Image 1 (cartoon, rainbow, N blue to C red):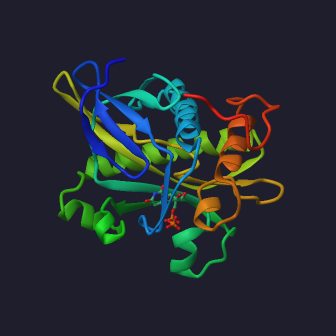
Image 2: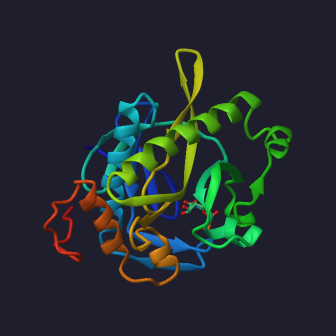
Length: 252
Ligand code: UDP
């Protein structure tokens, strides 16, 4: 498919104009970054794995009636998506204490939370994506009160689906981040799920051993990131069961 001009390059993905108005091609790079891009590396195969994993999850969410930006996967690296106006917030859902939450409240990683907690962070790398309150969001006009309700509902629906999906393959969904976008259609405006959902944006722990199968493997130097992501893909049936941990490589 002919690729239009580059419209945006992020840390892990690049966006190109799509073949029709209102569409975009989302290209998954092999670049990995952590700690606001202070730690960087290129990891062969990561982009292809995230493309496949995000497709699997977005299609599943679409099937239970949650609107997403995903249209179809084009190849091992790219997917066709609907163009949206991204809400400048990262929505985080936590089931178990970890990462910044554990640090902020001095709660040991792995402590189950009494209920899922939804947090909003401002999408601003220069500021380090600070946690923001509903007051901030409304006063600064980052989203309306109705949109805040919708974002919470979308986040909790994704949590229910994803926690169940992962439970079925022996994985605990500790936390995850989503982004949503505004879609304008026939004079109507609605929020739909955008960006990606992959082990780059989730914490996934093996249910039995607590082995990390997500980006913490890279952040904390715990071994091979592609081995961890391939393990998730194998358990979901996206990669064949008999694929050796570090190969064969996904081809373009
Ligand atoms: N997360 C993300 N992108 C970000 C920040 C967080 O995908 O810019 C994900 C992260 O992978 C984890 C969840 O959101 O699954 C919660 O992250 P946390 O706030 O604990 O931040 P961290 O400890 O990763 O800095």
